[in-house]
Amino acid sequence: MLKRILITGLAAGLITGGFLFVAIYMARDSMAEGHEGGHIYGYASMLLALSLIFFAVKRQRDISQGGVIKFLPAFGMGIAISAVASLIYALGWELTLATTGLDFAGTYTEGAIEAAREKGMTGEELAAYEEKMQGFADMYRNPAYRIPITMTELLPVGAIVSLVSALLLRNSRFLPHRPTV
Image (tube, rainbow, N blue to C red; front, top):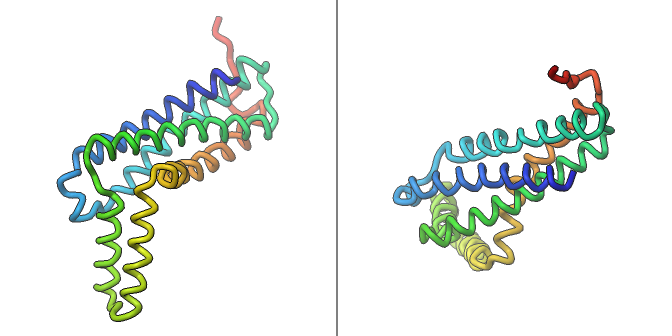
């Protein structure tokens, strides 16, 4: 099971991290203008990559466990795959930041402050918000803070996919294994 977890997590992480790298690399010149819709493509790539959880748990159930798997082992396997994938994804983000020279923290902070101004925030309220956002930017530049934050982008999606996979696959009559002759 551990081998299947590591291989599937690595594959899912490489898919999501690779998509992230390519998307940011291609759009790096227009990042200051915003990235409307980018999060939709990002989460779609996460769902696509994390669908590997379903297939890994099904393979574990059908091949290694004789067609039966209980909810908790199936869910635990999915969470473990999600954790590996999240780490690879976060490392992909680190590689993206290092190779593209993208100052995500600065760009994000500037955009948030500009949006606050457009909504009518002024005076002390705006100054306090600018200070808060600058504090975020300073913390985000530290990889020890940034890596766990980045991992939390993928983990919730993986948890949902793991939950659905475990609920479906605990029933041995759901997509039963049909050995080929």
